[in-house]
Image 1 (cartoon, one colour):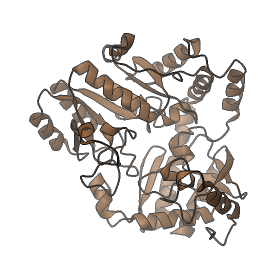
Image 2 (tube, helix red, strand yellow):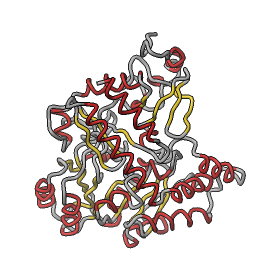
Image 3 (cartoon, one colour):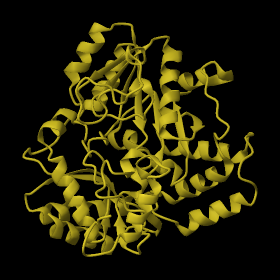
Image 4 (tube, one colour):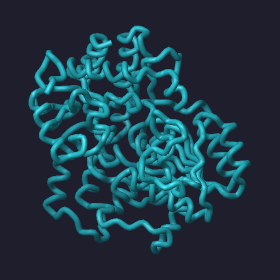
Length: 426
């Protein structure tokens, strides 16, 4: 099989891909990791340390993908490794009530302004599914408003116009029309569109569901005042305001995007950075709303919910996310974004919110929506650019719809390496 480059060998990755295709679909466990984005084959990774990642051929990379944002402290942080080892000695799982779930729930409630009550889950998709059932169960209404380009996991009711190439087609085969009958999909950053939809569906909308930063089309910030307007429109319509912080939670500050932008959500969901690399997610929100889960009235079961060994890691990770950690992330973000803009020299734009950023090869001055992304972003050029970054020791997703992110383990040297690699790859 062909190699990725002449500058380094990827022979073992090539051989593993050929072997994997005999038993794994696309040779991987999720399509975003496979030949949909990687050419001629994915890079198989051996492991990582801090802000670096190493592939099976021994090539070292500054890791800007960080498990799609899950590794807020990077790879194998010593404090997290120690916490896991201590917890594992007490057993992997009890599926009972435990003190550690109280401790971590209290910590989340102390950090996030919208988390009066907490329910643990295992993945972002699962938490979003539970939140959907909760908003419908609490309000007695069926319809939801979601937005083009927003990803809330791969469950049926959310799977419409989440990904490119877009159009009116659902995101996946196998989804019956009835599963989407109560899903209203609107353009984001457009208050008038939401007002019109609420007027057309008076008394029927259970919730407005939004990412606070559109993170499935790169990084698209909300327009000033937009999230606050959604909050007020939901309240006036008797609907709930559900902010999906799967990507932004514990990433954009201790209070996530809700704290950063000063918004009040009825329901929030967490994943990725909350678990610090492990399958831990949560839904949280106003006590009155969350208490609809009591006694299984709104049903959400889970043998693996609140796994005590994993929550021990989460507890330590959240302890580490102090003011100094977030200040450092902001400082690194400022350096890397300004450095990339200079290195790209007008060939692309860089959009960011805190330590999340994305490069767009585009003729537009900014990308503000799913439709902008589809019309103005050169997706093939981005893919080629990232494959060139691999040559210079920088790893991120080749999908222009995803984004790069920094962690507390990244260094100034890592930032310098990324900027130099971008200049050499453009």
